[in-house]
Amino acid sequence: MLRILLALLLTSFLSACSGTGSTTPNSPQVINGTALQAANTVVQAINGLQNGTGGLQPFTDLFDPAGVRFMPYYRTEASDQILTATAFESDFILQNPPTRNWGTQDGSGDPIVLHIRDYFGRYVWDHPYHSNATVTLINTNSDFQSQGNLINNLLASYPVAQYRIVEYHQLGTNPAYNGMDWTSLMVILKDAGGGNQWTLVGLAHGSWTI
Image 1: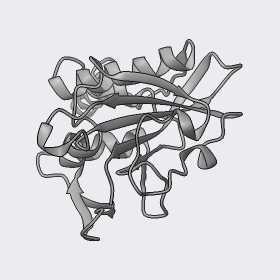
Image 2: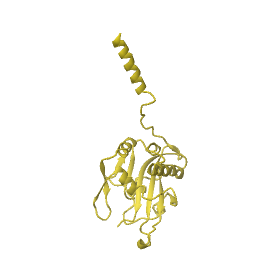
Image 3: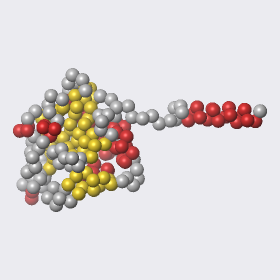
Image 4: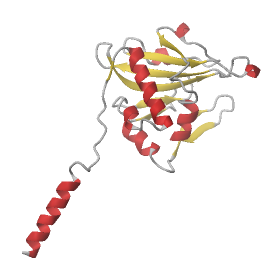
C-alpha cells in the first residue's frame, strides 16, 4: 500500500512539473507589415531589451529559425557570429557569459572579443535608434546614408529580391569630429511571405572606418 501511495504522489508531482510551470521553447514568428514596419518592430524590441521594459523574448521571437548574423561593420565577413534565438538567450541571461570573437576591429586589426551584452551595447544599440534616426529602406548602395572606407557588401549578400535592409542613421554630434562620429544600425529582414511577412536575419553596425 505504501509503495502504491508513493507512486501516486510521484506521478502527481511529475504531472505538475510538466504543466503550466514548465518553460516552453521559443516559437519563432513572422513579423507582419511592410519592411519598414517590420524593422520598426525589431528596433522597438531591442529598445525594450536594453532599457529593461521588454525582456528577451519579444526580441528573440523575431529571429529567423536559422539565426541572426551579427556584423560589427557594414559588411558580411566569414568571422561573423550567427546566433539562433536559443543561443542568444542562453548567453544573454548569464551573469558571466562566455566571450565570443565577433570579428576584427577596424584600424587596429585586433580581434573583437566581447561577451554578448558588451557587444550589443557597442555594435548594436550604441545609440537610441528608435528616436531621432534617419530611417531609409535600402534599394541601391547609394541609399546608405554614410560609409567609411570599407566596401559595403550588404546588398550583394542580401539582395532585394529576397531580403530588405533598413538603415537607422544617427548624425555625428561632436564638432571636433566634423561629423565622422556618425553611426548606423542596419536591420536585415528576410521575406517570409509576399512582402508583408518577415524574419530577422541580420544586424549590422555602421560607423566611420579607415
